[in-house]
Length: 204
Image 1 (cartoon, rainbow, N blue to C red):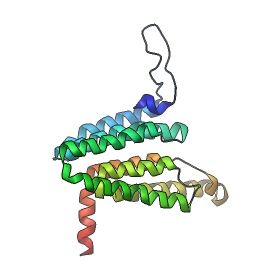
Image 2 (image 1 turned 180 degrees about the vertical axis):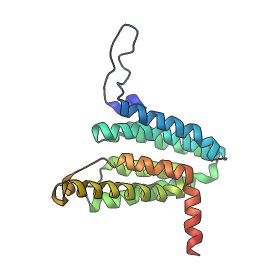
Image 3 (image 1 turned 30 degrees about the horizontal axis):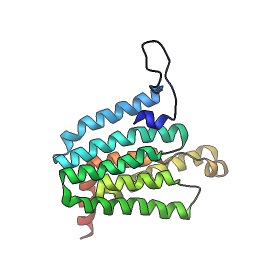
Image 4 (image 1 turned 45 degrees about the vertical axis):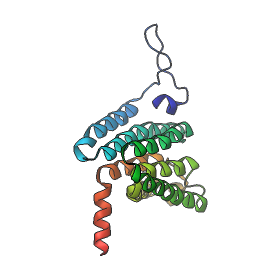
């Protein structure tokens, strides 16, 4: 996955080192380390094999997506495409009746971000829209949690930038949305169903 995300960035070559291995920065190492830690924690937080498999697989997708979007401002189709297929394959293998809910989540996540992208063309790219669909396939109903967290945290960063550089410069400052979707995805993996349950019951 990391090789797919780095678009040909090569490591230091030597007779004993594979030159096709991507060069990693300290930031990338921290992102990978956080992803490994979250993946290890998932079986202790979730208890259903279906949810555990989807959660670990999604983390494996979100790590290279985050690195790619930070480095190149792009979320490659060669990551999101296989990720979508993988989500459905896991669903069919571990809980076939839930696949329809996965598809509904994918349509909801991708559809919401598509509407936002069409309304505010400078704000989102199609890579973000496709990632929203992928999140829905993995998270089902909890995709709403992921998107809300992403929008909220990105808005906080935007307000912070405006407070620091002023409204004129702040409004022109662009930053990738993929990492915020990844953060939202992690929150949804670990606590999405509980948040959805709390919200639904708070309305009743």
